[in-house]
Length: 270
Image 1 (cartoon, helix red, strand yellow):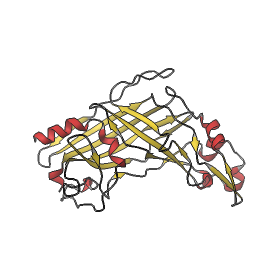
Image 2 (cartoon, rainbow, N blue to C red; image 1 turned 90 degrees about the vertical axis):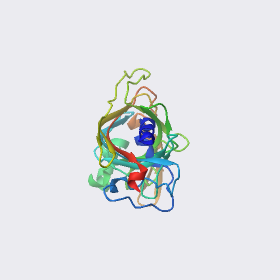
Image 3 (tube, one colour; image 1 turned 60 degrees about the horizontal axis):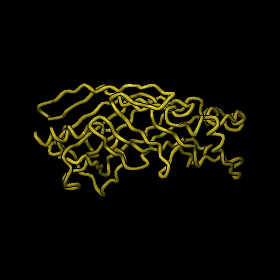
Image 4 (cartoon, rainbow, N blue to C red; image 1 turned 120 degrees about the vertical axis):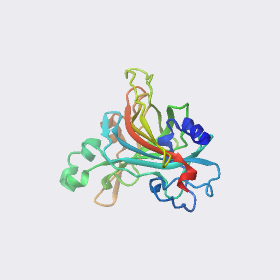
């Protein structure tokens, strides 16, 4: 139990970081009753791993520039960590590719109302998928630095329309405490989750936590291309930026992420 308690203290805000670590070649099969931790590497795969975590982002929102996207499709994160706070995932782990519907669709993103005549409203539905764009960094027990990029998914925009990139990511500093944003944003506070412990399974459950950040900057869009008549590509990065208020400086953006979490020592899972 000492290792368990030590790993728990190191866990802190690491729940969102489990998503993006490179998977190993094969995934071990969890023991009965611990199937939800598939994605956490066994000690045979990563000898230093001590704990397995499964986190679900159940709701919230992500606002950058003039666009505010509700989180309605739960984002599931699975993986494991060692006593140094380093995070790992196996071949089944990481972040689910959850698609969040963007209000206003492609028309709201570009302002090109005539696209309705070419494609129809259903074909112009737009989704946002959050992807990691670098290594997360733990900072204390209640926060995490999370570099991401947002993939804007719709065939009309091409397959490579992003806000943020590996070289210019959106860097979130998520916390359950109170933020200190630059103006015009005002401080906001997250929520520490409540917890319960099942003595039989040694699964520690956290519920109803909220991570927040309203201090991050958002870069301009890149790779957004409108292809007319199937063969005429036109870059529309400028349109996306002007309609979405991008780039958006620090102090003008905000995210709130509601989460639940399950946590247990790796020796229970494998």
